[in-house]
Image (cartoon, rainbow, N blue to C red; front, side, top):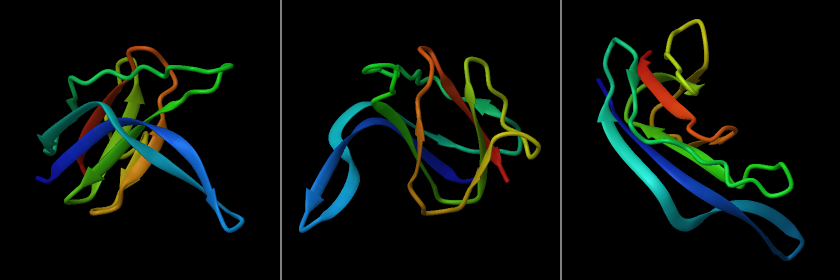
Length: 108
């Protein structure tokens, strides 16, 4: 079991001294914290891509205290065979692609 925090954010391109960095904005569009388990759990939070010229401007930020598997979609199920494995303590970002998109999480 691991505590998993999922946040919906948008990003903003910043540059200084010739360096380009894409950073999450401080505005949070939704968040949820759960305890992962050995079975896939569907989070309640739903994504909205808020597209500009067909490009999503919102992102999932997922941080976990332990190794987890995640899958995203309209009715996802997290498994070892599909989706992504996320290491502990590393903020991991994914673009939200569909209205109503959700995240499923399970222990790795």
